[in-house]
Image 1 (cartoon, rainbow, N blue to C red):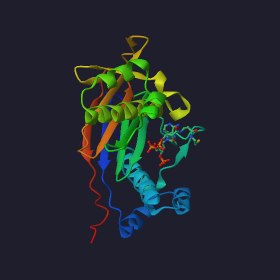
Image 2 (cartoon, rainbow, N blue to C red; image 1 turned 60 degrees about the horizontal axis):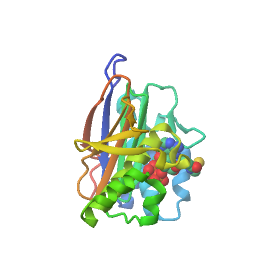
Image 3 (tube, rainbow, N blue to C red; image 1 turned 90 degrees about the vertical axis):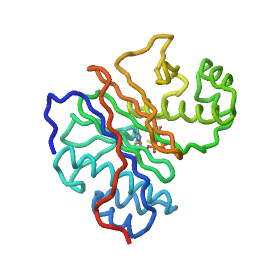
Length: 240
Ligand SMILES: CC(C)(COP(=O)(O)OP(=O)(O)OC[C@H]1O[C@@H](n2cnc3c(N)ncnc32)[C@H](O)[C@@H]1OP(=O)(O)O)[C@@H](O)C(=O)NCCC(=O)NCCS
């Protein structure tokens, strides 16, 4: 289904706790391009292969809905830093993230940049690692949190927010995540740069159940884009 050109920015997020059965991912394979199928075959571990196939399958399904082109016919190519572009359509922004057991895809039209990231909530981050990606103010804020569990979760939230932003920019972790710093305003993450905030950027933690933390970064000139989040249901064929 094509979206009219003048539609305001809207972001669709699909979350998918995909099946890990071989029969299922074999069924998703025909929706991938030949080079994606080749890449899938190079993964040493089945867990990584399944995650890659599920990510590209979900991305293609969502882009297909937006463009009216069948999933397998969409041409996706990475730029020099690895960010995917959809050939023949500069209007759509999209981003894909994978964390053990969950794929998250965000698609939008009307945004300048879009990035999504997800991590498992129980990811252990050592203190030294926190120092390597948090700014001095963020480290102080984390240290003031009373409970270890709350601190650990906040550290993961900061990581996913930063990574989603760097993915939106397309630079990934080539950029030092300490340069992308966040504070909180009424529970909403706000990116701060020298104390000021850039009002074109919007960051959110996305409700995604108890096992993962999902963060979204969007740059939009026309204010805060509406976000709709749904759990993707694979209707390609019932699994036995
Ligand atoms: C982008 C990056 C942060 C992703 O980190 P990750 O935790 O491994 O993976 P995620 O699950 O969060 O995201 C994976 C997706 O990010 C996307 N991606 C890759 N590079 C990207 C970039 N520079 N910008 C935005 N998105 C990117 C891809 O769609 C990828 O999906 P794929 O595996 O199906 O190709 C990391 O790969 C990175 O920093 N890359 C650029 C730096 C670099 O030198 N990479 C080496 C290879 S060129």
